[in-house]
Each structure stands twice: as C-alpha cells, then as structure tokens.
Image (cartoon, rainbow over all chains, first blue to last red; front, side, top):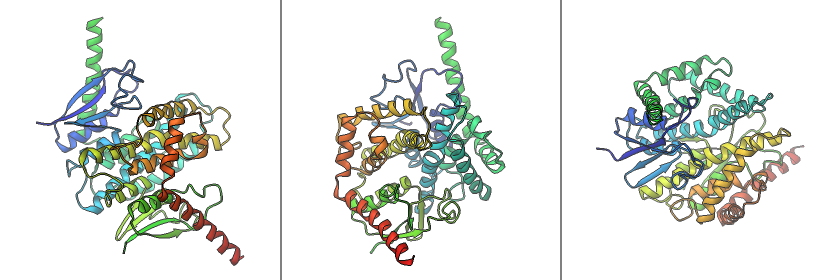
Length: 214
Length: 214
C-alpha cells in the first residue's frame, strides 16, 4: 500500500493533453513499480486556488504521506530516492543522474519552453531560435555517442529529457537523427505508454463527466 | 584537505564579472566551510574546447576526486550532500530544499534568463515580460511570508534563488519590496561577499597577467 498521490488538474483543453507534467510522475511510478493515487485540483481558477500547494499555480505536485512536493523535477528526484530503477545507488551514478536531470531542466527546457512560448505568441522573428538550435545541436552530439544519458543505463534523467524533447514543435525543429532515435527509444518504454494512456483517459473521463452533467 | 575543484573560465569580459556561475559553488563551499581549489578552462574557444567536461561549453563544473559534475544546480546539490549547513538532514527539510532549488532553476530562472536574453538582443516588445511579471509576483507573495524558502532556515535553495534574482535588470523589473529585502538578506551573508570578491579578483588577476604578457 502506497501513500503516494499525484495531483493534477480535473480537466484541461485538448491541446495540452498528453503533455501535462503529472505524466512525468506517473511515468516514474510506473517504471519503479510504485503504487499511487491520482487526485485533482480545479483547472478553472488555477492561477489562485491552489497556491498553498503550488505557489506558481501549476501542477503537478506530489504527496507522500505528510510530505508535499511541487516542481516535477523535485518530485522525480524524490521518487528516484525510492527506487534504484530510476537512479543508481553508487555516488558516481547518482551524481551523473542528478546532473542530467538538472541539465534537462536548466540547459534544455530553459530554452525550449520560452522558445515555444514565443512561437505560440505568434512572434515572426523568434529571437530564441539561435540559442535553441545550438543547445539541441550540442545535445545531438551527446546522444549520438551513447544510448542513455547517465550511468550507462535508463535513469530518471532520460525520462525527463525525453519528456522535454518529445514536444512536437521542439522535435521538428531541425533534423537531428540521434535525438530523434533517443526520444523514440525512451518513449517506447511500456511505462511511458501506460502513463500517457492513463493521462489521456483521465481527461477523457472528465469530458464524459462534464457532458453527463450538462 | 579537500579534493574539491571548481572550474571556471581563465578570463571573461567585464560585463559578466561577479555573475559567472562558479560563484554559486564558491559561495556554497564558503557557507559550508569546505576547502576548494579553483582551476580554469580558456574563455576563448569555449564553445568547443571543453565539451568533454561540459557538453554545452559552459562553466562551472566541479570535480570531487574522481567525480566530475557539470550544471551549477547539480554541483550545489552535490555540495549540499556534504554539509548540513546547506541542507537539513530530515526528509521533509531535504525535500523542501530540493523543491526550491528546482523552482529557482525551472520556474524562475527559466523565465528570467530568456527574458534577459531578449532584452539584450534589443527586442522592443519583450513577449516574455508578462510571464516574467507573474512569476516574480507569485514569488513576492512567498518571500513576503517567510524569511527563508525552505525548512525555516538558510539553505542552498536561498543561495540559488538569490543568485538568480540579484541580476540588476531582473531586480529592477517592477517594485517588489519583499523580494528586494530577501535578496539583500541572502546576499549580505559573509560567504556571498567572500565568493563575490574572490571571483572579481580572479578575473582582475587575469587582466593583470594579460597586461604583463602584452
């Protein structure tokens, strides 16, 4: 019996379905064989209605008994502390995993998300495109030389990096065969497929429930 | 005797002096009373000449005996594992510290650095300004209600968040008295002052050495 609960929205529009970051935590739990419940906060009023749990109004957050943790990256490191399947236990393997978790968040996603934000805002001349290209090119070299980012095996760093990169606009920004093969390899894992299907079903069920209520 | 070495550039132009991220690692070592050496890689050719140590061509990276770790956030978490002065040892305090380290990197710096990048590129209409304002406003509420981010005491999360926020353009973006007081409080610590002065002296010595060679 597990005390883990992943908190996400009760409903989201179609666009972000399959990409809401509760998927990262679901995926990690599936990889590790950790049981978990899913609970929700309202999507409507998200900017202010759950700031006591998540000061930026976002999801996911994770509860583990009395502990409550926001930031998907922090939730992943917490789960990695529970299972060697997510992170090796030797100091070098652990350090390398943490390093690539942070690189996914602060060297890659720090560029891809603002770049995507500018694209969505209709900017004609996306001034982050050059930075984006150089970071993805550097990463292409890395994943061209190895199968997994850290410790010679799948870790939570691959889970996170692949989740950052699988966004279609990011993935189609230039032709990077090693990165493409890497993202395909990581997201072909059964744990990803289950987490992804479960998130889609969670929001589809919310549609059915709204429709029945209407 | 310590095996810690912080790697930075041999020289940088005046603009980034006092802000190169080796400062984060120097500061953490000073807080924790950990001895360390400083070594350098050339600034010229940085895009390609140390990719085997840092795949994005940046600094700092940290070596600890045979371990080598890039990403300043990962280096900070590694140092935090060495000293309770940087992170409490109880699971709740540790989880809260890690959560705010990740928030500094992925919820605040993910906005402030690309925003700053657009400002520097001369964008007239900075489309990240709205996002930047809302994130800083949310953080203003947090630091208006507590002295330190995590565990009711100074941790490495404060070190990192204050370092993200102290950049002058970020700090002068709107009037946020609680954030301003927070940044002043954290950067008034003697360990910050020493690390900051040491970095300035490191690059000033490089100027003198270049000048003597010329």
